[in-house]
Length: 261
Image 1 (cartoon, rainbow, N blue to C red):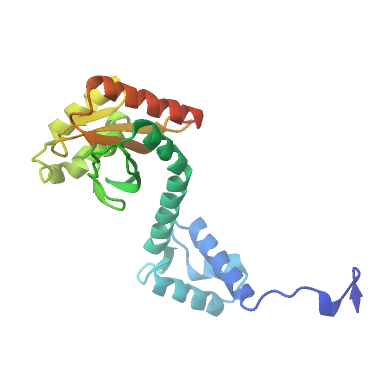
Image 2: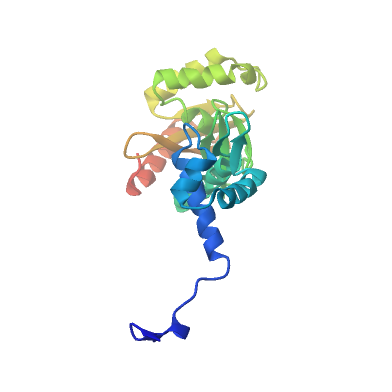
């Protein structure tokens, strides 16, 4: 039998297992749409046009893998932590790839070590680094390392420019952790943040790392949200006030050419 110029033997067939994958993706989307209040098995089966036993079997696999959670008391399904972890990882790679060429340019122009940092809950996470070509290099932070928001120039610049209530919420959440870092207090972090807002960037002259001065510069999107932060670090003798201003202007110039503030 011919259909639209093709014989039935030439009509492309779906790959084996494609239908199962499609069903699984459909169920994830349905659970996501109900996530705030939770979804019952009957609701999921009806929305997906699947038999309840089929929907239950697929959901059971997702629950076992952590992509969906099931509350035996309420009998409701919600999205699981593993989906959050996947999304967080995807976000890190997206941000890193987006700003890779930018921090490379900053590294070439300043010859100092450059870090790219993002927020992860109440922590700051370093997701990329470019080592400078200056003979004496500083590597105060490793890729993949995290610390409380507020500790470190880039980390503080992620929150210093937030609305005051949000900033204070972070300080409260991390208050008990600050003393582990050179015995700093909430008031120390607040004082440095207030000074940073006035000058537009954070300077930590040996505060977080002895003999190392870092400059933390927030990256704003078009809606004035801080999406990431860039830190430039060097030995303190090299970071004169004049050079700090030069680095800040250099970073802002490069960011502006890419559509960021």
